[in-house]
Length: 179
Image 1 (cartoon, rainbow, N blue to C red):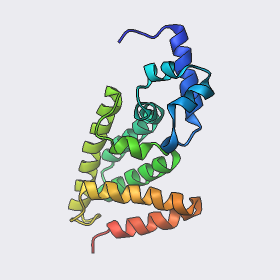
Image 2 (image 1 turned 45 degrees about the vertical axis):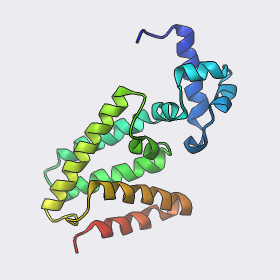
Image 3 (image 1 turned 180 degrees about the horizontal axis):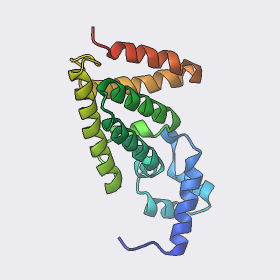
């Protein structure tokens, strides 16, 4: 893909700035175009779907989640590594309301984000397996179930509010321990 012209770069930056402060679950490209002061066609040239725009807005959070997974993989204590990674992901999900959508999406617009997600999934599976073999996490939990629980955590905290974060996280962690 050839580099963008300077005016296209400015338009892209304006679009991202206009979308950044909005609820990612209710983004409308027409509204983003109006707020950015560009035509809706310009928005569609840069981001053909709302999902592509959310993915771009969330790419930094995906990279931070991958960084947390890599750091946890270097920890020699499997239980501590898993819990540290889990805490980082829970915090990122609450900080970026588009992260869950991007992580659960089968496809994406950006090869870089897709590669980061694939590595994140592989590393998370390894962290879970290590923690299970060490007896720190219940052995019957699958990665898919863990992903659903983490998404449920985000939903529960958002329904109740930031003050619920600690309690809901403690209940989640307790439920992950072996019987």
